[in-house]
Length: 189
Image (tube, rainbow, N blue to C red; front, side, top):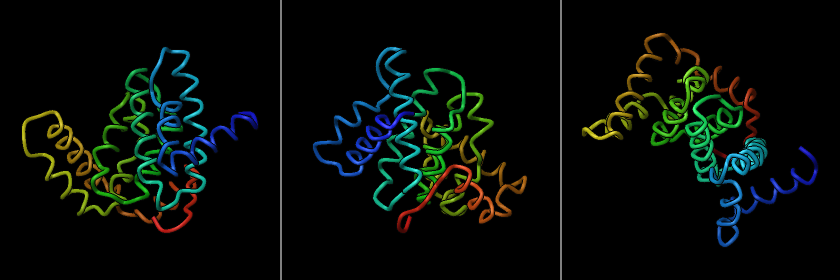
């Protein structure tokens, strides 16, 4: 990516972080939308913004990380294949906030394609605390709609991870994941 693109990505990230009037145009430039050529350009720009976000993740960046991950998931679902570094980085960024309610978003990222099913680590869902994540997912399993079914499948994946020892060294995993995905925290998260 050239210097102008990096500046543009930095400006877009600043607008997303700031909120207000600048958020809508920034989201429009980064959203999953348009024809195939336009989507490719947006995806490239979104990748640079995600990388910039990961390099200085702050306490106010939760909604930005979630929104960017939703866009990356939509792009993968539409394409039907692949597991981009952007999606994996954004999963790690969202997980870094340790919110049990993000478990379904992480699950959706995992389910986007065959490749994401192999690439998204179940440990990311446990960053919020295994017991709290189980409880949050269990609350969502009530009902017979697609949302409840997704929560049941996510809970099954979490339990499968527990049964094979995926959570035996979470602190080590999180250190590795932060380094692997370039997460640098600027303040408490």
